[in-house]
Image (cartoon, rainbow, N blue to C red; front, side, top):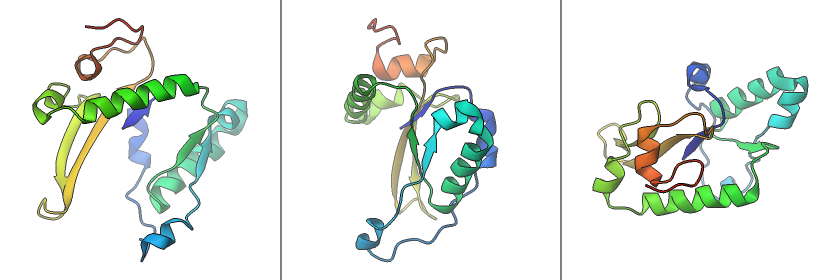
Length: 148
């Protein structure tokens, strides 16, 4: 699941495919330090440093952890619970929340011949001012809590 806190889709061209080494064994994964992107530091004037940290994390490892984002643990728990509920739905129901344009549900086979696996994703926006019909179809709940 990808959640955007502000319009950022125009900036994804900065992020290249991950080129970091793949771990040889599962035990090597525990040795990896997950890079952190600090939004509070970015707000205090360190935006360029945090953008570089984000890009480097995407290029070298492929993921990162956002800290000091101001989203409360209760809200994060609700979003995670709703996402879990959504991804457990039958495929036909999940498909009603897509295709992403740019927000919503998407899925595809991965690998050279589509034979490695299946990936699902849900692109959301956290601003109550941005409404996506796909997001409403996914959760049947508006940002203000009203259900459909």
